[in-house]
Image (cartoon, rainbow, N blue to C red):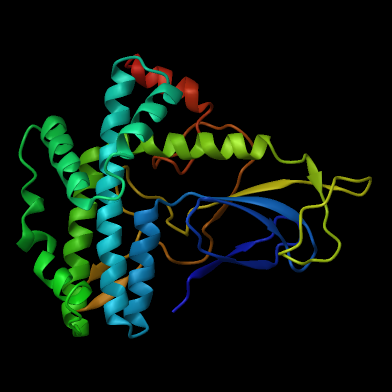
Length: 297
């Protein structure tokens, strides 16, 4: 089971392995040419967790797969709450920074309590969609199966895990489709964080030793321009609101949509948003936020 992915070095185009960590931004040194680059992973945590669950299942680690699928569902619930709250803040004319600060302070009250987070999701869904969240029923979420595996040490069969993965995927896919363009609200924060991080890095670097663990050098006469790379995991062109993670197809077959070659796109500065929320970089996170707040197209 792999917990890493590969990206092409923007300097020498050779593959550079990257281990998943609890962040979206990676400052990397190519082990082949020593070139420095900053990697921005355009994937939400629930997407990464669902894919890790799929890889665990395919590798024969059924219990570990259940844990990853369950975590993916919880993080998608968090994503929905954030998208809804930011959407509401934009309609009231708050700046992106103000909305982010208020939401972060509020989320800390429920950050370590899943029941509180579930309550926040239920209320957010009711206020946004105008109907109760029927998907929160235990039989829809597969709660009994999840609890038996995670808390009571049950050893699940592969078929059971595949069915559970399908249930989780259906809920995630439904939430993202109902959010539609509102998914862009959370991804704007990711883009803004990357812009701030990149702006604070040196303008040029070259590392001579090729040691990924070595500190970044001070730019010198032979410094290469620091490159920035965005990676979306090979999701391809998806419709707004669709899930870029694995899905279940046929009887017991897990497949990744758009998992062919590619998955890496260059970042050359501000551009208009692409066809999928977050697949392109907004011309300016703050200006786009202001346009949305004003109800402009």
